[in-house]
Length: 73
Image 1 (cartoon, rainbow, N blue to C red):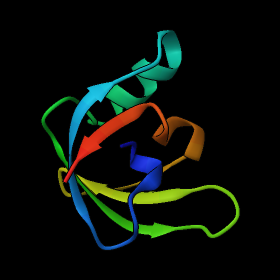
Image 2: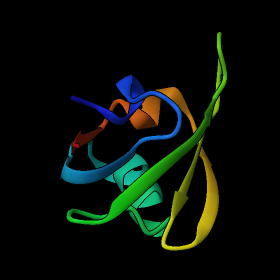
Image 3: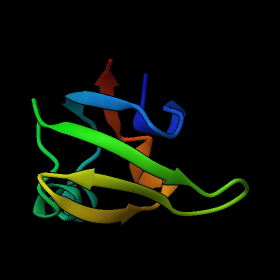
Image 4: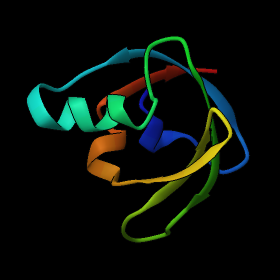
């Protein structure tokens, strides 16, 4: 299951990071790493972004980036 598939109001744990190069580095620079909990605050109905809370910070992710983050509930 990827972060893109998670509904609003759920907290999930990152299991694996997919992707390579600058995209993966950008996601990791946001503090999203394996084992961290992510709370999904808001999801735009038709386009970007997905708004999440990670380590106390509110972040916005593109849906394409959220597809690279595998999570578990």
